[in-house]
Length: 234
Image (cartoon, rainbow, N blue to C red; front, side, top):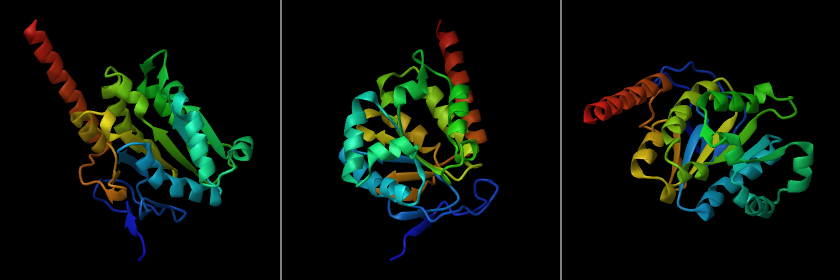
């Protein structure tokens, strides 16, 4: 059985359609037009069961692997990659594998800055790198965001805004969320900011996705309403 085509060109979201290069498969389907994915898992074992083949295939295709993990998970992550048959030492020397600390990447002085993160991910996009690899497969472990509520709203808005960036590039971006670490309201908002979702180990086109302009406007109206309620209560 051939894998399903997910995120193939369409006009449902008002996006400019174009064909994407490379035959990339993830979680039982073939990626098409959309390549920004939120992947919900119950624990790391389930996550690596799905991510492992995708990561391994990327090395075989000579794609760059950019992995954002917490400092406490780095050694375990490298061990998992080695179990997939990846030579982690040589691939880091050549630059094909780059592992970054997720807290250092997302937070600066303990603060999440949306504009800074847009610039950061713009620099990670394959069109803005040295051209050694045709595209990047970026895997972001989002556990860091569960450690504090203060930056969650900004993160959710950023997750929506960054769709405009990834629509201009061919890279695949997988945002990995542990269902046990985030509340229901946060999960719903995260779901609405990604055109593709992995649930139950399978990739699906996300019917709850809302285009960035519409979602950001809704989010800011929600914040304004909260502020008015707070002022009225004082």
